Structure formats: C-alpha cells, structure tokens
Length: 260
Picture (cartoon, rainbow, N blue to C red):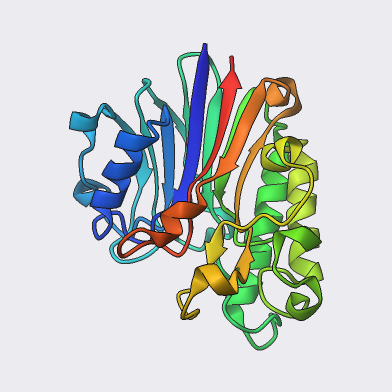
C-alpha cells in the first residue's frame, strides 16, 4: 500500500502551526516528520482534527526538537542522544507495515568550520560520527531516514560549490562525515535517486532580501532509505513554494512515496 513521507524543518511548530495545518490539508502526506520544533512535547499542537492522531516526539523548550506526525499508527522504537549532547535531535518509530522511520536534526555547527575555535562545529562532527557508529553496530533494515542533516553534500546541492567550500554545511570534512554515516547504514539518497541531475535546494537564508530571485539555496534536508526498500520509492519532490508562504520557515518540505 503506497504511503508518502515528508520531512520539514519547521523552525517552531507552535509559531507555524498554521503552516503545518496548511501542508496537511493541501499535500496530505501520510507521515510528516518535523525538526526544530522548539517546543516541549506536551506543548506541541494537536493535528488530530486534520487526520494526524499519531505522534512520536522528543522536545525541548525553545530549541531543537523532533516529531513524527502520522495518519498511520506509530510505535516508538528509539530516541538517541548521539554524542551525549543532551539535545532532542532524534526519534524513531515503526509503522504497521514494519518500516521504521528515523527523524534526525543534525547540529548546524555554528559559523566557523574549525572545531578548535568553534565548539559547535566539533559537536556536529561528533554527532555524525556517533550516527555512523550506531549504523555500524546495527545495520538498519526496512528503514527510512529523514531530517535536516544540515549538510549539502553534492556540488549541485548548493548555489556555488566554489564559494561555499569553506562555509559550514558544505565543507569537505562535513561532507565526508555525512558520507561515512550514510555508507555505514547503506542508506540510499532517495531524492537524488529520483532526481539525479540538476541544482536542488531545500533551504534559503532569511538574510536574502529576495530569496527567490537570488536563489542562493542549499539542499540541507534529506530523505534516505535502506537498500531493501529503496526501489519501492518514487515521486520525490521539494516544495519550493513553501518558502514563499507567509512567515515561512527558511526550509521547505521534501517528499517521497513508497509502494510497500
């Protein structure tokens, strides 16, 4: 039975409750994974009236936070505190068809790509290393991984590879750490499996006066699957228009459908 998964860094679920509801009403993904909810779990708005009665989440007041909102029943299976940061950055749940969905919010890493002078950059690298080690310890099966991974790995995942090589989110050391985590789990990048060529972005800075015209984006939001179900995926897309909604997140939703 086909089901559609969407991932979206919402940048405050309470502030943008209306945008979440709009996405649910117009796009109706079966499973919606949110990052940067910035809310304790008990303060996350209910979307049951829109057909999403099932919620698995980890929250913090004002920071981080991940949530899986679903039309389908969910069974929580994990919530990792990678690198022992004490942050709400991961939660995983299993669907009735046996597919496990991992929702990640990888640390942004601050502004300076040097762990010796920027603790946040070191935390980001350590988090990715812990993800890698976790996948090595138990290689995932029948799993989907989504989230704001805060890295644009490919040259065509950024507006200018040359100009961003030393900018956090596209530096070679970050790209290598992400690749190691991906390889450890055997994860397939579903978005790029479906859309192998061309510039793709899911994030545009608030600093741009006209984000659409400047189009200086990065693909920071990802949707992966394990090889045993990757061939069941199709219809990947990025909802660019959401960046132009009223009081938007700086990220937009990423979708894929699985025939399972």
